Image (cartoon, rainbow over all chains, first blue to last red; front, side):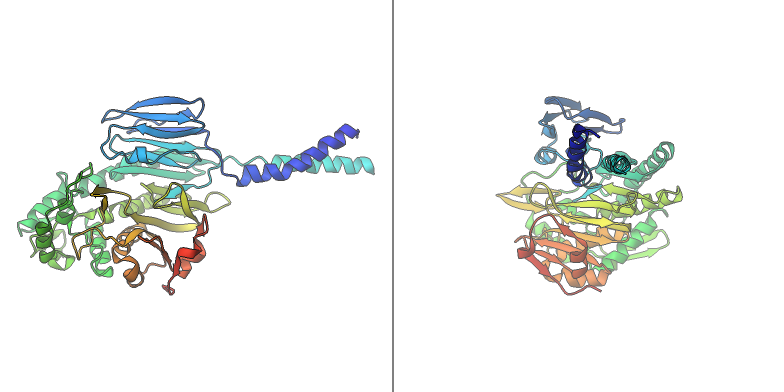
Length: 119
Length: 349
């Protein structure tokens, strides 16, 4: 074993605790959003790059904003605006829905922190 | 010797790094809209064709139940309500009878705080509409008149599928337990299909069975006033988690919030509670209890929970104090320090 091998092994050993904590116990930012539009087959979009998505529902067009790996309802034709007030979604497992316009956003990741959210 | 040790160290290192790779989680997710909300079904380690087939069956069940039980759109329940308001005998589909009997049972256990026959009061407040009422309070005289008539399940006689009432103000609104009942039927459907690890989540109220592989299901409870999670619980086995909150459906007049959880004793929204979270082994009981305990408020929730057989309760009042029983406290994990505002009750059982 050369000295370079020993340094490489030492670095790998030092990195292991960080990798365990990060990959097994960390809050994982979402990588994808699942968009459900009525009873259509859900579509998936990435959270990069920043952009605006326009989704047509029965009431009109909901505008979805993707920014810095987050997503939110930027505007909606519904009267209640509950979806807009839900704010930004960041972590896997979070979701927001516009029930009147029948559009929902669910963030998807490899290992979400929660399997379901109660409210 | 040194060579052997080096090879062993390398092997352990490789195994360690392989262990860092998180397992892929074989959870099938399905979503659809029903009961005016988003239904999310999560199934652990179920083959795709079976998962899709059973989820479509559940969706059809939800649609059929929604159509049969709708309180204000034309259908069997609206027809029954018309008959009862005319003091004529009405009838109900035999498939709806178990739900009605559950509604009566839970109303009795809650001392009438969960009242499934005050549909006319809910309509007065404008909550019998998909859109929220905008800035208009109901006529106070109309509310007083309704309260004077005091419709309750004691006014109703059920004989098979024939239903009669002596109180013309009776109108069924099963919104307080319909989701819970439908979730229970969905869990029955999953078990019949041989699926024993699942979550059925109807707009944030859910029942979880089994677990997520080698670990429990992890459920986050959203903070009632802030973005983010207030607390979390783990479920291994079979539990329903239901929350009633003043943030779900409401409107504001002159800066005051009027929400959809109406106190049958006053005719006005129950104003001392922000949210109630209940855990119980069946969803229909958890659903009715969350409503009843919200109305009971910080002074009465404990006695109503005891009479309804509820073991786990967390109530947040409008001052931000968290009222909790010891069993719930031992089960829940708060995200941040909330002990300063924690009020621990006597044990429920």
